[in-house]
Length: 639
Image (cartoon, rainbow, N blue to C red; front, side):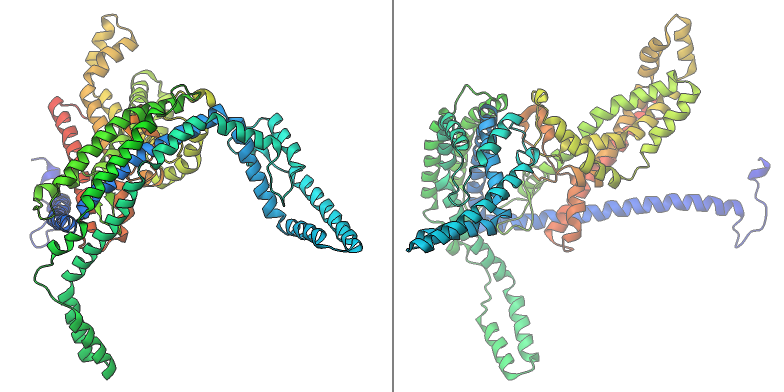
């Protein structure tokens, strides 16, 4: 045995220096294993406790009739989406076809509003002075009143000229609809504007009339679609009120025994005789029932099925002609796309309404809720709603979709830059370039994620939105962007965070390609670039794949950036927009945990739902790392 491995030196309780070093490193490994195991057990225990609790919540949801009400709520949500698309198309077409006219009308509203705010006292004086002239009976009094009116009118004219002179076109016409010529024409027309009569100038009236006339057919179709769901909306309000009352009574009934016990204990310990009598009387009023009378309470929903049927029929009766009346030849390409989507969604909505009506007709309040329903409603649920006055929903799908879309955007951007930089640094760059590029890329990983989040909010988000407003880029899907905090913004920032990880691992994988492969390629006459692309990269592809997987694990587990810049809208993005879906806001699994964990009470269903999300996230990260290690082990390349 080599000398440096021999046991020597002092020993304490039979433990020497070599033994202490071995126990230290071995103990660290054991502690790490123990901590990882404890995390897994804790996550699994809390997540496992969520599903039985969730099942009981779903049972109450069904027994109280809220599940039936939810059919109507979801129908209204689907209809509202079509209604919203119609409004978007209407205003997109108005902006395109009558942008100048709308700019004149809106700018007049903004200017007159500012004048009313800044000259409120002067306008009141002017109105009072005119009333004084009208009320004066004698000639002398009328003359004095007229003189005073002339003075106030002169003050108003001066004030108006001064205000119009300092009006900023970019501030008033924030959407840039008016050119310099139209802006000057509006200012000239405003010089004769009377604040007491508050009549728009002839220029504005003409613009408004032209705009209304041109958009009349579209507006009629929009109004028909917008009013189609009035009966269904009314029914929704009635059902929410009834079923929420049943649920509140059922929840109170569950705690009746505990409340009665607390009141009786309070009546014994109360300081005065009056308080003791009052608490005892309150306790006696509480009835403890073995079972809550759901069958009796659910009779409050009698007649709602017929109302539901009639409301759906009324909605479809107005929706079909409303969609058919939408114009086909539009000036705005975006409005044309929106109308096409409405025409596609119309039949789908009607089919959905008919299906939902049939399902609600077959619904029974006393049908048991299985544990499978609890599990599937969590993993495939489309809603995550907490602290609701109606009912809380815990659906993972919108959070998972947001996390996945953002991660995909990040990898699409990060992989070419990371792999290209790794190839260049390892195979093409000189020593000086290597010493500059590699440390700079690795330094990106040291930037705190919260700093990148602030950068995304203030700089990147604003820049993307400004770029999306450029007219000649309107053909890009999702442009112009409505929100600066969205999937694209978050994905680009996570791509920046993923670059150091993927770059370093790809560079290591390329570096581990045997030099004999490169030498053989060059000896056979291959150029340096051919050798890299046809020999080095294919040989290192397993290590590169492992690097991409680890980069994916890095971005899907990121919290702060997505919490700050993803938009935090809990909804499945509208994939009907195609590639433009990336300009919508979203929420993520990591973001929801960070956002809501500090607000929940330990042991509640909401608390355990967040742990279930955490377990899913932990499982995904674990599977990614296991897959990467298997790839490395399978091909014997250190990535």
